[in-house]
Length: 220
Ligand code: AMP
Image (cartoon, rainbow, N blue to C red):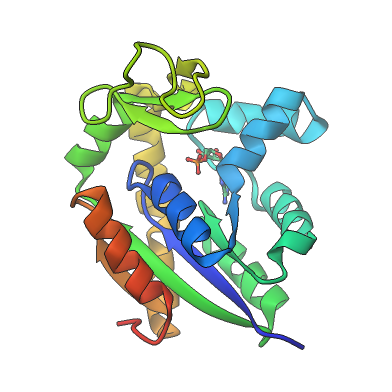
């Protein structure tokens, strides 16, 4: 049985997980699995799963573990994950991490990278974030404004504010992160799998640091 690389990108909403995940996956030929994107895709397609997840997402709460796990395990069973994959936004609770650990058994090399960004910076980033409806590329009204207002630089698609990027929902998401997801740092540190990376730096610098540490063996 081959050992697959499973990179886990931890960090609060707005830490830059999505942007960095896309770059890391392109550089290392990994499948990019974002549970948030999978849920949003289900919402768009109006599936039964999307309907069940919607209320939780709109309120900034976590979708119940059993729904997330079923969706995630279906996804990572697909052929594009055979060479390894990056998890962006999963796990978000200790039971999710335990379920993943059980499923992977000894057949994976797990590297967990935790992006750290101070909360005031996260608030600023999230509330000014505009996401492309078509390709999910993210712009920031101040730091990475689109060349044409309201249009994605990458594909020309319509830029919108995610319904959960409003100040009220963002505050809830940050609270949920502190209470339910941050304990994962201790979970993975205890297994000597965690490396912490300062995410409050220019994108390129953060990327270089993450790339270096994603090779593994540098977990601190
Ligand atoms: P994200 O795009 O990663 O910020 O996720 C958007 C929303 O999807 C979250 O606020 C949750 O409601 C839901 N979600 C995404 N991933 C998970 C997960 N691993 N566990 C529970 N809920 C999730």
